[in-house]
Structure formats: structure tokens, C-alpha cells
Length: 328
Ligand code: COA
Image 1: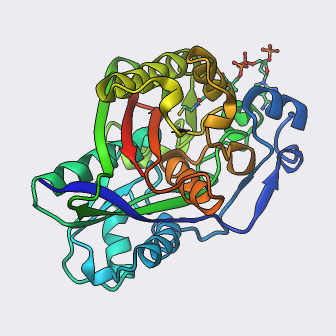
Image 2: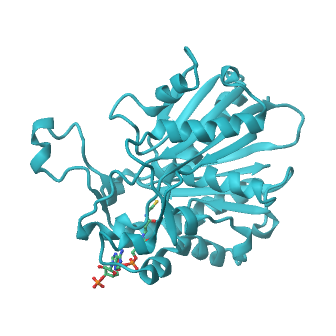
């Protein structure tokens, strides 16, 4: 049975940097508050008209180049996003067309901040069963267009950013590396604690103007409490499954929602923060894109080397969460 190996990583963030200071244009907030509560200094915003598929395309191109693959060698595209270009169809087919492909299957998944880990798990299954040999997995988001710029939107509005990350996952035989295990969970009882409720099938289109609209809702404290617990559990299940001690892992890449969540997990496992790769200070929470963006930067900075033991973990809206253990 082949293993699924990540053979190329890429990322793209829009050039426009939005500092905490600039957010004061809309919100009664401060750099001190945002940095102390989340670890975020700045984020990127796409210029409008913005396209999530287009951000994904730039990241995908980089990943394909790194893997030495051309688009027509892709057997399946998996596109993870909570901010698709259209209500339907998903952004996967738009990316497929942009890559110049004719009939390559494209699968969109809606697991929010856990989208990349879920996508990795799906790719792993297809490759292990021999169905596909080369899969492009993209996590991309444009969130600056749904942020609530009204004063009451500040708690959520300061946290999120735009960006994209991508990996090429290939069948590899006899290389002693690849995805070792993935562990997925969800708990719909908390679906309404972090959501954008519209547009929705529960609301008739003609009622939209006077209704709540596309504003995000987040119960920050509840989300934080669950995120710390679930992310820790997700890391633990991956460690247990592999029989690894926490300090045997070379690099942890946790979804970048809030640096305090990563700090809490590091503390729980008595690990130094240097074992965790973070980029939240530069990009904020880029949801499905945050883990592949970290992987691309970690590799670029020499923090990820062939043979390294790596654990990925994510938690997000749904609630959904999960982890993956791999040898780089
Ligand atoms: N700037 C300044 N003040 C703000 C603010 C902002 N952007 N947003 C909220 N505040 C205020 C609140 O109004 C509140 O004021 P009050 O005490 O006068 O009522 C105060 O700051 C504290 O707010 P609180 O919500 O208690 O802050 P917190 O310590 O819980 O931190 C979050 C808020 C959002 C940073 C934190 O709850 C969090 O990170 N939650 C998880 C977020 C997350 O991970 N989401 C994605 C999951 S994938």
C-alpha cells in the first residue's frame, strides 16, 4: 500500500498589509489589546474584486512547481474554504478551470479552520487505496469581505485575514515517510457558537436586506475554552497513535487562531514554544489556509527537513477538530 507524501508546498498572501493601527479606522481598538489577546500584529487583505480561487491558484502554482508537477498530472483537487467565491458551486471547480484542466475532479470541503487537516485525511485515504496518485490540496480564504466593520464587529474583525496555502500529495513507495495517521472529530452541538448564518437556505433571498446578513457571530470565550481542550486532545491522540513522546516531535504546526491557544498546548505538553511554528503575528487567522501557509514558510526557513516528525492540529467552527502525524 503506498504512503501519501507531501512533495510540494506553496503559499500566497495578498500584498496589502493591514496593521492593528489601521483597524482603528473602523473599530475602537488598539495594537496593545489585539496583540496581547491574540498575538496578531498585522494581516493581509485582498484587493476587490477578490477571488478565493485566484488566491488558491497562486499557492497551487508554487506547490506544483516545488513538486515538479504540471497541472495535468493532478488526479484530484481538494479545496478547503469557508469563503468560496460563490454560494455554489465551490471554488474547487474555479481553480480547476484556472489551472487549464478539462475534467479533473474537484472536491470542496466545508470544515473551516480544520479544513486542511480534513483534506489531508481525505487525500491520504484516496492515495492509500490506490484510487489517485497525485492530489492537490488547497486551503484558501478571503475573509476581509465578510468581516463586520460596524463597531460591534471588533472582536471578530481584528482576528481574521486573507491568504492561501497548497500542498501536492503524492503516492510514494518505500520512502519511509508520508502521512502516518489522521484523527478527525466534530461536534455539531456547538455549530452556532462560531458561524456566518447567511446567505442560507433558511432565509428567503428577498428578506436578506433587513436581516442579520452575512455578519459573523463568535462566542469568543466558549470557542477559546473548547479550542484549548480539543487541540490538546488532538495532539495527544496523534502522539499516542505513533507511540511518540511529545519532545520527540521535531515540529508542531497548529492552526493559527490565537497564539494563546498554541501557548496553552505547549504548556500542557511542557514543550518550548520553539517547537511550534507560528505566523499569526503576520497573517492573523487565515482559517483553512493557516496550516499550509505555516508549512510553506517553515520549509523555506529550514525548520522542516526530510525525515522530521511533524504533528498538525486544528480546531474551528462546527465545532470541528483533528490532527495528523507525518514524517516530512
Ligand atoms: N479591541 C478592544 N477591545 C475589545 C475588542 C477589540 N478588538 N474586542 C473585544 N473587546 C473588549 C470587550 O468588549 C470586553 O470589554 P468589557 O470587558 O468592557 O466588556 C473586553 O475587551 C474583553 O473581551 P473578551 O471577549 O472577554 O476578551 P477575551 O479575553 O475573551 O478575548 C478573543 C477575546 C476573541 C481574543 C478570545 O476570546 C479568543 O481568542 N477566542 C477564540 C477565538 C478563536 O480562536 N476563533 C477562531 C477559532 S478557529
